[in-house]
Image (spheres, rainbow over the protein chains, first blue to last red):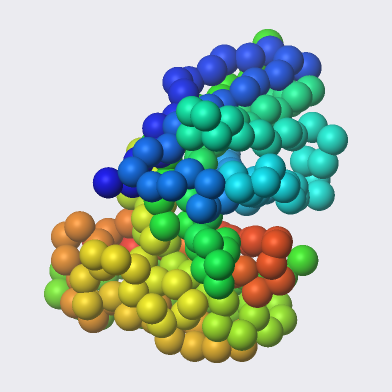
Length: 121
Length: 108
C-alpha cells in the first residue's frame, strides 16, 4: 500500500533552517511528483510547491521563492523540503503529498502524517 | 492567483441530515476542483477530484458537482465520522494550486 512517512517534529530558532524528509513506499517513486503543503496552527492549507521525482523539476509558490528548496533521492524514494531563514510565521505542520501523474497532476491522493515545525526564540 | 471562497464557514447539523457545502472560484477553473476532508490531528484525505469523481474508497454518500466557478460537495446523510473540516482545492491554473479556507461541519 502507498505510504508517505515523514521525519519527526522540529524546534528551530528564527533565522535557522529546517529540512523535512518524506519517505515513499508502495509505488514507483519516479512516476509521481511530490507536493508540500503546510498548515499553520488553527489555519487552512497552503500549497508550497512541487517537485518531479522523475527529473527533479520544481515549482515553488512565489512567496517562498528564495527560501525553499525541494529535492528528491530516488535511491531511497525520499523527498526533502528545506526552508531557510525561518520566521515565527513559518510555524506549521508540514505535509508531503503524492501528486497525481499525467492528467491527474495536482490531485493529492496520499499524504504523509505531517511534521510539526516550531519556530521560537 | 485564483481565490477560492467556501461557504458557510461552519455548518451545524445532526447525524442523518444532508450537508451541502459550497466553493466558489474567482475565475473559471473548468472542472479542476477537488475536495478534501480533514479531522483533528490528521492529514487531509482526498474525497472528490475533478468536481465529481469520487476517490478510491470514498463512500457513495459523498458527491460533488459544478463547473466553471461554482461547485458543491454534498453528503447525503451524515454519519458520525463525517464531522470534520472540508477544503476545496483548485488546479485550474496549473502548476499553481490554491485551497479554500474550509468549512467545518459540526454536530448540532
